Amino acid sequence: MTTKALSDAHVMHLAALRAQSAVIDAEGLRIGSQYVMFFAEAGLMREHVTRLTEGFTRPNVLEVGLGLGVFATQLLEREVGSFTAIEPHPEVALMARTRVVDAFDVPVRVLVDPWQLVTLPADAFDAIMYDTWPPDGHADSDFAEFVAHVAMRCLRPGGRFSFFHSGTSIGPARRAVLDRQFARWTAYPHTMPAEQTPPHWTKPSRDFLVPIATKGGA
Ligand SMILES: C[S@@+](CC[C@H](N)C(=O)[O-])C[C@H]1O[C@@H](n2cnc3c(N)ncnc32)[C@H](O)[C@@H]1O
Image (cartoon, rainbow, N blue to C red; front, top):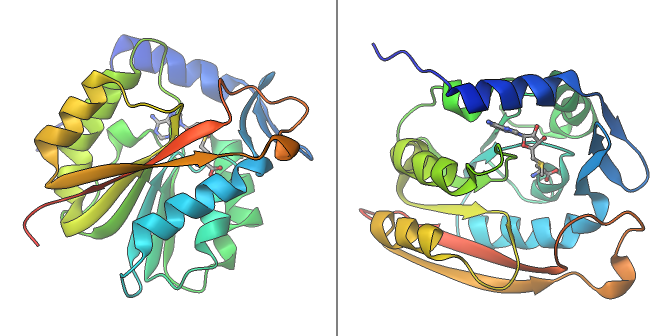
């Protein structure tokens, strides 16, 4: 049996995250004083859902970082087989569960833990969306670890992986992971219309990419 453990940086980051209160207002979800997700990102999340699930019949979907439930809300429009979400902040998880996840009429699970401590079944998911909030300086290393140890094991052959990406180009570290681990991948540009920008918009850009990577072996 393997015992999973978090680095000191992750332990401190999660403790700080969980110590802050979570509030949903007309614009989106604030953890502490910072907006982490906006309702205005619905169009972006819709594109993630569409590109992750198109062509699959009743896909089993995993989301890592349930947050405000914007991705999950878009997924409600799609006929899925099951929905599993990971969200380590208890208040955030509870709000998303009652606001969105309980509306699914298929099996759902909300795991209130960081993904690093969760064990998921192998070859179980058709689609995985990764949208978390890692400690500063750990975004690319967490991404590489997640892809190698979770996405590759838990996606079924031919399954798809996507992740939140702000900006118009994917950096070399992530490109190398995608090239190494997946049979193929591509990234679709998406721009949030200027008139939809919320008053307290915090993200670096209104330009995004919707990456879609496909596991080989189908
Ligand atoms: C940007 S939000 C996700 C927004 C979500 N995709 C939506 O559609 O509303 C990022 C979320 O990742 C969560 N998170 C932080 N560390 C995490 C970890 N180690 N594992 C899973 N989720 C994590 C945060 O608590 C936060 O709710």
